[in-house]
Length: 305
Length: 143
Image 1: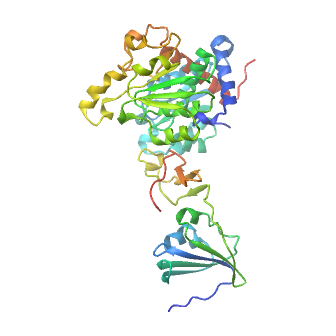
Image 2: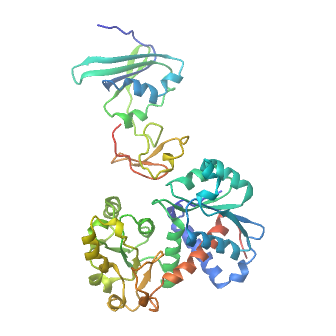
């Protein structure tokens, strides 16, 4: 039995298979409409996350399966002090597969160790969010036809953003990737990631302003710069507009550059960019459903001819 | 001068930092073994000033001493057979260490689920970096 804890749990060849399946689902939704008939997905969400939970639920319903679960710790037996290990043993009796989000890092791994059904890490604190990374990779591969030889800009909160860290770790396995990191000094990437890039001889640049590097990018991955991450108000006011993507900055970009964002977006992408054909962040949400469908089928070992 | 007799078969752990012998006794789980153990504290040492020594009389295949490489590289492990030192055991960093150090990350699942073992995995042998198995936080303290 297989679980998904980190995007690196799958080899690049396995990811290719998963993405091929996701693309087949995209093209032939009807074929998969009853693939999980009689199967149940448990969504065990110990903290609120409407988007990821609904994406998992939509994925299972699209496959003809059903969904049970809880959407915050208060409505689960965790509020009575039950351990994750005990909860998953119980859930294993009710469902065929489980997607777990937990504020504590490593909780899904603990669950996987005790579970008799596949467990998918749906986000554990600031640690991993593998299905977001799979979503990002599928979006890139579907819209560009490959996952290698790109210059990718990652912009915003690069220090605390787990989606950014996960995506970097996943992309370094492909050839010809160059990273450009755009962030204020306070929110630069942690050293252990830049050390890893140096060790692997992967080219990267760190810059403060977005405008200068826009023409170089094949992709721009935006994240939110939160006010509370700054040491003082003055710096926040000075820097916040650098990280707002608007029409004027988009004019500097290549005609085929794509903008991604893990969402939710607050104000870091101006709504005027939404109509730009290069804005791919809502397509990304749709790919999130396809990749979760493919993942559920893969982990349940269900094949559709 | 205190005199502790020779052992026939087992280990003599020498050059233990003074005061650390009891914690090593526990980490090697010697309390669970039915064998003779001598704990010598604050012995005179030319090299260290003061040191601790542990003498363990047991089958030499019985003990996994690799955790000592994590705890203190400088400990000398003398292997004893028929009353004599037959070799000095080379210590290799263990791939995994269990319940020797604790994860200090407040966001780690081990911070709320007390019954979980604290497991660290060797992430980089060259730099001697261990990471928590659950949250991957790097262990930065000293033992």
